Amino acid sequence: MEEIFRSFHRVEQRRWAQAYLWALIHVSGKKTPRRMALAEALPSAAAHGLHQFINASPWDWEPIRHRLARQVTARTTPLAWTVAELIIPKRGEHSVGVHQRMDAVTGRAVNCQRAMGLFLDTDTYCFPVDWSLVFGGAWDSDGERRRRARIPETETGHPAGSYVRGFAADVSARLQLSRTPWVLDLTRCDDADGVLAGLARQRLDVVCEVKPSRLVLPAENAADVTTVADLMESRHYRQTHVLIRRTADGRARSVLVHTHTGTVRLPRLGPGDEGGSRTYRVLQRPDPDGLQPPRYWITTLTDRRVDEVLRLTRSRAAALSTVTTLQKRFGLADFEGRSFPGWHHHMTMASAAYIYQHLYAAPGTGRTAPAATPPTSPAPPAPPTSPAPAASSGELAGTAS
Image (tube, rainbow, N blue to C red; front, side, top):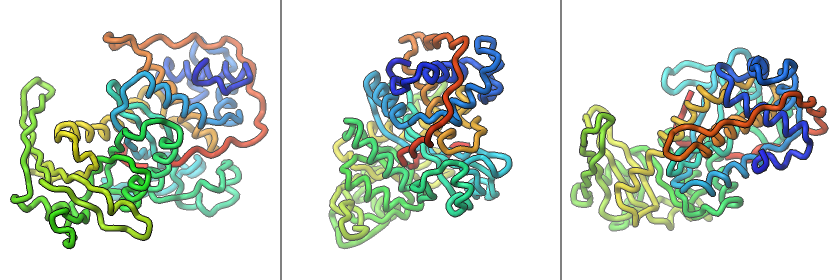
């Protein structure tokens, strides 16, 4: 509380933050103010205070998230940045940001909130450090609905790639982690070219899974544009690596990875595009059982060993695992309010609860440190005086629902 929530200058606001954080960690089941207030350790009238703290109290979530990120970087060894897409099914149409979206897996329309989360994968856990709510449908054009939800004018529907670039720009400006690579899944990103060009402009290293149709320019014949799939069909320019992995039951299993013996560049995407001047390495991983098509990655980490690059690709799965934990234990998808600031407040507190439990765990025991006792009689938060500012935007590593 002293470190992360020091921007809260009012005592009652800090006490309600402590109560909400405590409830997210200790109360089982759905994490709504009404249910959390049933905890014996909280005062009988806590539901109203918790609701006001999240939905009405005018606090800025950005400084909280920046301090959470700095705590993670200070206490761990950062390995990679990654982004996960979160689909939260909702009933009705009044929750902020809810719109119809086609489920890529089932092919059916889903009534949901769509969010992008930024995660920092480390030597211990994968930590959530930022969120953006993705708008669609009437939320981009219905001015009255946007006014009621207190949505800033700058917050409109954007391609998924723009959130990646926004996250990267914010990280570069605020954290000294320019050498930490970005591990992304661009196979379902409509703006993959824009993402790669944006990260190239910021000179950030990447490990990106791409479609087989990703166009590249081989260094040995830069005049011929080809796809990564066609490039890796040439055995003359392909090197095979055999990596050994341990299965869950302790058995050793060989993993084949093919790499292009040279480097490639990307076709220039337009004036001022620096992506075409960067060199990338291409990796191909065949399906061990031969039932699925091969997967492809491009990376700027041309001097890293293949096993190191392949290990970084696991950051995507780590982020999705973190999303699952956030939903099951810390109420990530349980926000029921209708305001944009309220949604960001709840997501910030859920992230803080996760980071508190996992960052301050007793070393080597797997047990987490106990949360502070909640306040017994916090005063109600003061009524809002102005809406909270918009969150920093940011992108894509996988999808969780």
